[in-house]
Structures are given as C-alpha cells and as structure tokens.
Image 1 (tube, rainbow, N blue to C red):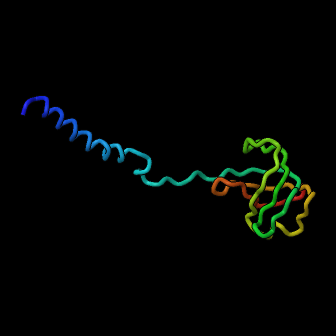
Image 2: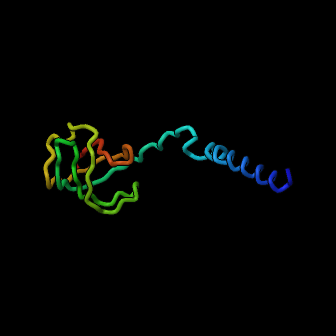
Length: 112
C-alpha cells in the first residue's frame, strides 16, 4: 500500500471514531443535573381574573425587585386551591411567590 491510501484509511478510521468521542462529551451524554431551586419573593397586586377550575389567578402586580420583574399583569398558579377562598376580582393582595418548574406560583396570600 502506498503512503497516500494508508493516510486516507487512517483519516477514515479516525473520522468514524470521532462521532462516538464527541457524543461522550455532549450534554446529552452527561448525567442529568438537578434543576436549580426556584426563587422566592413577595409581591403586591390587584386580582384581575380568577380561574377556579385551574387554580390560577391573574394579578396586576407592582414591581418585584427580588425577581427583576417590572409592573405587569400575569397569571399565577396557586400552590393550593384553598388560597382562592374569599378572593375577589378587584381585590388588592400581598402575596408570597416562588418559581415552580419555571412558572410563578403563589404560596400564600396576605392583606396588604
């Protein structure tokens, strides 16, 4: 075998091994890492909508500096449907929130 075909054969063999070596270094091949713990904060807002079936309340809330959120209107899941008791559209509330699977969740409601 001349040097050139040997070089070509070596490159082909090396290229065939490269995808396996590369795959071992990709994040998909790494063991699953635990997601970071959800951030928690306190906020104040006005109830604009209540969805009792899905235990979701929409609030127009004031800025929440701990989360870097400006004033906005957004839905929040409730940690417990019991938090809906006595809640009314137009009511101003103070609330504790945390991220649950990347989504905001209200864990407690207080009088402002």
